[in-house]
Amino acid sequence: MSQIRKISVWVPVIVASTFILGFLAGDFVNRENGPTPAQKKFQTILNIVRNEYVDEVDLDSLVEKTIPSLLMNLDPHSAYIPASDLQAVNDDLEGSFSGVGIQFMIDNDTIKVIEVIPGGPSEKVGLLPGDRIVKVDGEDIAGIGITNEKVLRTLRGEKGTKVKLGIKRSTSKKTLTYEVTRGDIPVNTVDATYIASPGIGYIKVNKFGRTTYDEFFQGLSDLRREGAQDFIIDLRGNTGGYMEIAYLMANEFLESGQTIVSTRGRDFTSTSTITADGTGSFRDAQIVVLLDEFSASSSEIFAGALQDNDRGLIIGRRSFGKGLIQRQSVLPDSSAIRLTIGRYYTPSGRSIQKDYSNLSVYEHDIINRYNRGEMFSADSIKLNTELKFTTLNGRTVYGGGGIMPDIFVPNDTSGISSYYINVANAGLLQRFAFDYVDDNRDLLAEASDTESLLKLLPNDDALLRQFVLFASRNGIPARWYYINISHDLIVNQLKALIARDALGYGAYFEISNSADVNVLRAIDELLSGNAAFPIIAPESSAPSPGQGSGKPKTVRNE
Image (tube, rainbow, N blue to C red; front, side, top):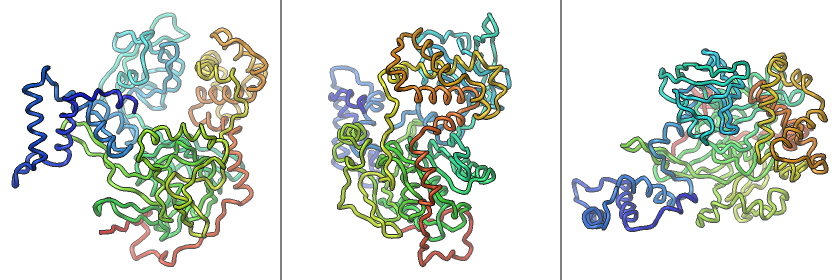
């Protein structure tokens, strides 16, 4: 948003804006009726600028700079995606991309391989966790201030293309060279599934992508086979994605005929009511959904469907508040716009879209929430009490500003000290964990799960002392008064990060969540049976003939 504000407001840009507006509104010249007065005006101004402006104008460049500003004036979520970014943006949701198949981090201007994706192109040629990528196709990329974006552009590419990687490895004095043939790499949207407590499964969903429902269903099924009867669904930090995926996921927990969501737009294609079809496999499970201020869009559709049907318990903090629906349209030059074409409403009829009449206030909403204490006290939350709705069983819920949790859990600041902030901001926790795993890879290879891994680590005090010495060598002096305040937090984070680097991303959550107040509260509520709302099915819940496809039913309003 700040970059948009930096765009100069000078004559050629304004002219380009009017040109784009005319283009997006329809054909520039209506072949049957001729141009409208407004279109004539746009064309006249454009011609004047092209022919008479003091400097030569690059209209293509101005178009690229101006479209984002144009769409921003509609609403905060209509957006322009340049052609150069469209593939990467779509890759995150589509479920796969072509690349070399590694997870990496940048440390001291060096690309460090954290994980080699099993079965991927890099594993096939022999790359290992802990490798440092120092050359790509003969070009030095270490020590040049490389960014994550540059790494992605360099390593991704068309399937079947080749890239030569120069590798520094601790067991070799010389640089090793590997030629990797890029291939399809899955984009996993479920980060972790594990048994959080006897009978309780935990599943973390990071976005709603094309493959999320399949991953989600598989994760729930695996957890059930491991003994889970009830589930914690963690949507914290999940900013959304495909709405249809949220419908499918909610359908797994709802009875036939129960509304999942309603959408309303200017035409019948964006106006509909989605109801469950009664074929869900987990309709008898207790459900807790974890939300925070960064849970948005599809996350809120899913949570709203369960909350309004009194089907799940929502724990955490008030969600983001995005109730607008975007449709992506690809333009002739392979760029795209995502235009808001409708609003969605939860089963009780509420829109959770927060006010965006003042874009500056909207942009700073999360910061303002922190400043007024909302993250730490439920009493500080501003609710629009005029937008009052009722759930299926008569509980009161509110619209106009996100999903308010049934149980508020404040932001956990226990263990936070100036020392912890300093080492975290410097990235030293991640760097220590990477180096520790790299130095002890043979030992840690004996671990098959988090339980066996933790037995191989030093005791808590010894691990902390090693880290404090490491931090001192990297510019953060030991301050034991503050270190002792953060003792448990630092140790837990180190163990979680070591587990991530040694066993995979899912292991991080398994250890980190052992001290997570939201997860612990969810476990308590499930064990107490407090998430078992009585189900009152709608009178129209009987399935219609031929129903039972395993997908929600869509009713179009024409």
